Image (spheres, rainbow, N blue to C red):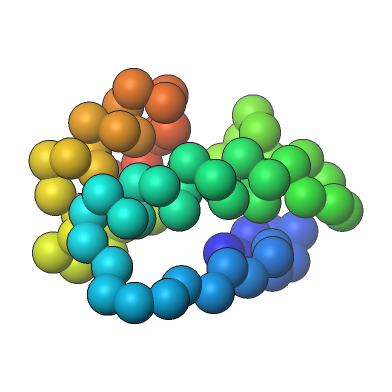
Length: 72
């Protein structure tokens, strides 16, 4: 994860990732990454999707349910 405040913590992923695993990873790690020092990004960030096949309806529903805004 990259931000104007600099890079955020890296998460290592084991195995093959599908949309459900991606949602699980985001659920576990995205809140910590958004709140990591040096500044909190909680109120001023958007998630960027890159049209990877994992970014399916499952992920988009998860993002909407968790009030995570994505870039157009």
